[in-house]
Image (cartoon, rainbow, N blue to C red; front, top):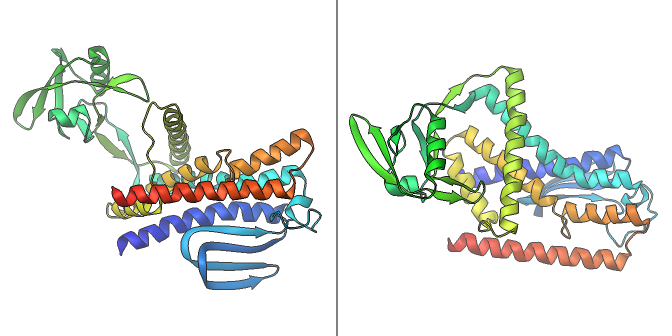
Length: 339
């Protein structure tokens, strides 16, 4: 039940925020929005307010705005239609969904940092998380271990650990460790981090929680969002270039992760929602058919050439895009179910 509720919460927020971006910019630029819907499938609730029908549907895995003139079958000169507006207005409407998904994490992190404080790394040589599957965990290092020396060199602070691992390269290196009242010597062989091209063993420093003022929380939320975006683009580049293996998760996988995170607390579920929002924004901006990025590329081509694509071309592009998304969703769902 918690997994179901967490899934509805996460998808509901992401879809509402994304579609609201398209909706509000369409309204502000004078376009006619015929329907604003959250979810797909059978209608649970609907209400007509002015010219717009607001709908809540049974499957909270998506949503849409029915903006007059966006269907390739609609006349191009439709009054207050999408295609009757200046190209800058159309570009704004297309990009607004992803823009809202970039803004949402800033607001989420601001609320979390202000309400719960912020965890910051401690500069002492004590292991925080030891990541499963990497050299540190495989060699027997554990969370809470204090590193006394590496390869005979005394360790006083966390930065010493990073520097000594980098100096060791990819050769086995002895760690002298204090674990409770016991002293141990554990040999670890670093591996190359494909994202940084530096040796690493899969550990992070211990953390301490500090309370932030509203201004500090605002700055920290922007900084955290910026760093996550940067890391996501670096990871995407490495996947495209083959440096790292591409991992896909469909609705089933995301729902499972939402349930797992929800068990750790509401603040963790909010952080998961922020991460997923950034993923959605970045993926949606890819210049692929049926995605916002693909639609923006078409508008950019129109702006440069001064010519619009014909109805047949637009329909074919949409069909290809829908087929691609459907195939990728089926593939990701199959991977989720077979993991």
